[in-house]
Image (tube, rainbow, N blue to C red; front, side, top):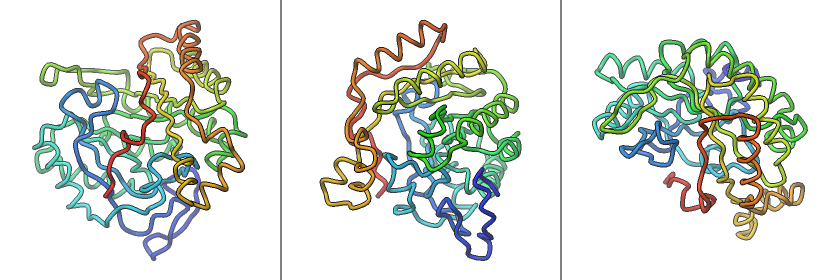
Length: 303
């Protein structure tokens, strides 16, 4: 019951949830990561721990190698705590837990162990936004910063791409709980760079053909949350389905057959229109991306 699917599987008895996870945590990568928003990764890098499997399996996911459980190894609470301490030793700006929701209890335990052993960095919960209010509230005192997606307003779009028609409603309630738990954005100086120590960054990725829905997402964030969150408007949609289909991947071919628009990157003109819209509705101080971020070279190596 850790995620909104509420599948009820007994993973302690070797059951496998909707997320694809079994009884043990699985980690795909632990390393410094330099491609997050400036107050998350700075120049020192964010201490990212990528967890295998995902409770929201978007059909266009650029990290499908881990979200579908293909890359990763079992790790104990002690081992994950040691990863955090090692990343701190490497000079990480924070500890960035990527798609941890389906391992929430064990991840929280690992943070607690690491803090007992000297972890002094902010902890970032990097999530799809598809979270229960109860799970967010259980993170209070453990998580300092949320780096969360807000993917869709249109339920038909979220159903088609991510298999859930209630994404907007669930993500809105979860975001309200995140703000309630960690408060307004706060920063300090980390080696001459601004580091977020508390608060919420909300990411929205513009999808091919999704400009109208993206505008709806920005309206919701502007009018519902105002300056209580920082917004990140992203253009890095990477058409990994197209290259997978060309390599003979039957699932990728079938997905493109249903959603041919996903075969192409977002145009610069569409992205500029979305940024202009953000300005027009009074969305201030948001993060934006330069062009050429939709390359597969930006996808971490999960091997």
